[in-house]
Length: 320
Image 1 (cartoon, rainbow, N blue to C red):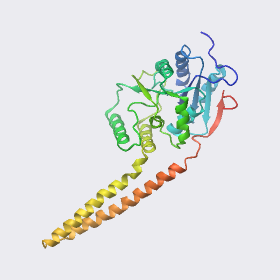
Image 2 (cartoon, rainbow, N blue to C red):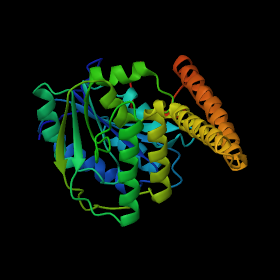
Image 3 (cartoon, rainbow, N blue to C red):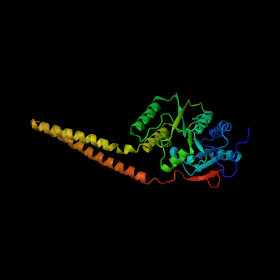
Image 4 (cartoon, rainbow, N blue to C red):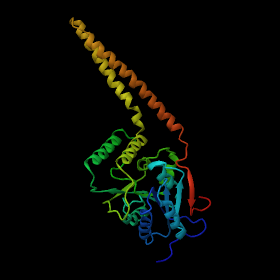
């Protein structure tokens, strides 16, 4: 096998693979080995970037040792846990490749798809995403997953691709376009759709784990889904205005009922009480909706913060 190490100087890798990790001391060497095995035959140069999100095990030590052995492997150590949205995105923005691959460290994503990703990208497709097929999950998790997709479809500014977790390859122009959006809580898989660039999906079945276990549980996945819905659904802030409109209609209906009852000499107290309560809710949701629209405008005008703060970088060139 010829030496595929990155050349010296300012030459850039063709492919950068970004692997977020937290407590992945068992998986990190295995996933790096699997990625190298898939990319060496198909690309002239590549690098692998691990970005550690405050691991409490030996992940940083293990990856740092890997960096010492192979200059294609790089490491970013965050100063604290910045969450499942900001940390991976920061790693993608730190990559220098002509195309960037995002994938998990715990073998949720299949390294065997990498050659097909590269082939499809070279054919001119700027975004290539893996889509999980036939994944077996419990009824509760399946319900919440389907619910999150329905809510995102109904209220989202753009529709995310179901069962596409973000595992895929993104052209440099796509990464630069998302960076220019300057999202403080980037829902990356949604932002890929928002760019408007062509997307091709490739189906795959989740492979059996080669080692270790996932750090995700129901609550971390629920938190990610809620953050994704909020981050990609700014129109949801207008929802109280629709509720206010509906309550306004009910208020008008009850006032009409009171007039009808008074005309025929019947009691109007319950009609007026209902109208008063519904009118109060109408005003409450009206003001909440107006506040939400203002928050949206403020958010659009003040996006200017770092995704993460770094503690250490290993194997990066001085200008990166």
